[in-house]
Image (cartoon, rainbow, N blue to C red; front, side, top):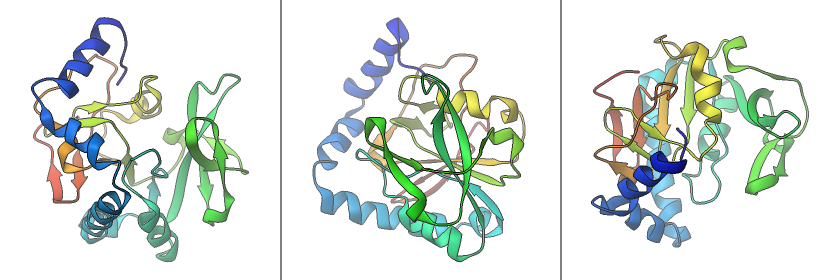
Length: 208
């Protein structure tokens, strides 16, 4: 989901006015111990989820910049023999996401904007993989599955060919105080089927 012009202002209003949760989340993100503890709880809920256990191929992300720490999930996926796909920005201006099959987290390297990405290996479109489950980051989510992204619609673009399908299951990862009542939507936005927070799993009311 993009944050631009009038729509971006609406997104900022949703985060900053009338929905105190995400404001608290920004404060909580300054406390590494709190973020680490909540990340551990969030990951435990994902690992106990039947859809995670049943998945043989998972697309995930490396949590950075105050996002939930996803490393326990990445390590668990590899230990369980799941095929793990991680995103890498591609294109001459890093304008779209490709996914790289990863067998060792040592393959991750620093990238622009504080990201960690696979250093080597061919990248493919998500629609070209056999992924069963996708873990998606976001600035905020609603309980109906609407996602507020980071501004360039990278995940919306990657998920577009799969948006009408029930597989792969799309699961948003966030802290509980990043849940809001409403967010602006556009036709190209791709939501999530479920949300994972440190408080548990939420099946979204409107599967998108």
